[in-house]
Length: 321
Image 1 (tube, one colour):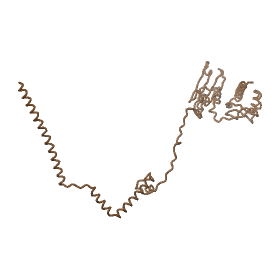
Image 2 (cartoon, one colour):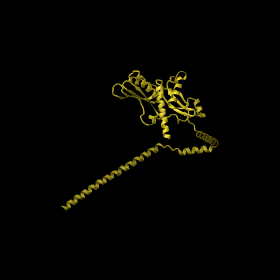
Image 3 (cartoon, helix red, strand yellow):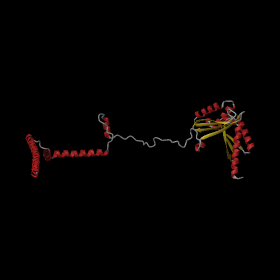
Image 4 (cartoon, one colour):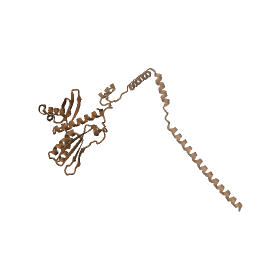
């Protein structure tokens, strides 16, 4: 047998076992099954929301199922395990079977679907979509859709994040197909971004107070010094040494004091007496008068020259006549 045919036969076998278990475990919260081949045999794990109904009283139901699977599908040493579903409200297969069960009992399809959608959203789903196709109310078949929230329809989120379940229901009018798809809120979408805070904040340790700050803090009237540089403290010490040396020189040498006094007298400008100030004012007034006289002479000379020119012109005209 070629490898391709072997895998196809395995897939067909798993689908037939799933259909058989769904028909046998009706109204027991059956969600699906998975096959796993082991050296001891094949292990079949059943996912259900009601494990008590699947196991039965003292494991009677499970023993019957193992014998039926062994006879019908020719599986060597099958072992059936039951896995309970933690949150059945977010399982699409269980919810589809619930809708089918409610409609089969005689409940209106709208009321049944809306009640289950509310339960799914309240249990923490991002979005729900329910398709009911067939002869719902009239003799003509149609597809009725109910939606709530957000569901991805394409890409990897549609395959990985959306859970799908299908259930069938036979009525007098015909067969109804119910398809439920649920998207969980915990599934992270590709466009989700989380901004972290407090990563680049450095932990600052409190600095020890310098002796100067302690002195200023003890006396509350004085302003507190925030930053004290060690270099500044050293410079202050140097200036103190220089000042001390100056004092010793002045105390020791009297000649230096006399020299300082002489230099101070020379550097200070002498005050002008009242007589000198009066003389300066008189000199300034004389200078001003001289400048005014010069201006007046210039104007007069210009006027005389104009008169002489006019007279000459008149004479020339008379001569010509």
